[in-house]
Amino acid sequence: NQQDKKVHMPDMLSFAHRGASSVAPENTRAAFAKGVELQADFLECDVHLSKDGELVIMHDDRVDRTTNASGYISDFTLAELRQLDVGSTYSKEFAGESIMTLDELLEEFYHQVGLLIELKNPQAYPGIEEKVATLLLGYEDVSSIILQSFDVESMRKMHELLPDLQVGVLIRPTDSFLSAKSIEDLTSFATFINFNVSFINKRMVDKIHAQGGKVLVWSKKDKRLLAKAHKYGVDGVITDFSNWPTNDPIYL
Ligand code: G3P
Ligand code: CA
Image (cartoon, rainbow, N blue to C red; front, side, top):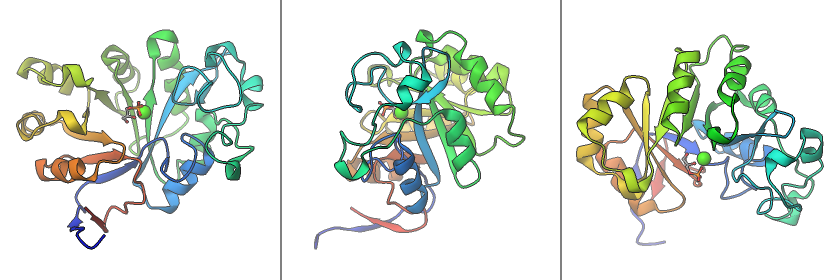
């Protein structure tokens, strides 16, 4: 587009939302590989528990939208989930993609790129924090891994289980005004406080930074808002536009 404006954002980390989900089926091996190829700093993913207690990667708590089956993830064993096609609903080109476990994601991508792991609905999965902690204990250096959730208590627990691990709290749009007291509480254990890009302003970013916290914003595709977030000085952006090399310009 002739009218597009070139903006440099070398100072913000880029997170590939559900992998490079603008060009491959979300939360799949293909999307994560594409995120690496497109030089995202981190891959974002969502984690649930299968019926037999395995940590599996999918966004929704049901398999309906992204697979050829129907039902809750928690009603399928891992072996059953592995039979599902997680690529075809996106495009025939990705037919045959199968669900990944968190273990596999770490094995395949930990050495290549940072990982932002979201516990999607931890209250529905008692013990999920301990399972994640046990898995991550197998990794001596967890500095390139961040855990996040909308569930504050779950992240407080993750911090207690693994104090070296950076955790982030996702703020719901309806709760996006944070009092000084809540910022102080959240930054006492969470490194990141993460907002939908539409619900953040410079004062909030400044207040969180003043408490030593960092701010990530997520947006699917709104480049105008992302440019605004950049002006506010956020620390990173979680976006489907993972063809956004950290040190290269994007066009707005
Ligand atoms: O990482 C933030 C973002 O992923 C939260 O929204 O629904 O895409 O998991 P959602
Ligand atoms: Ca997510």
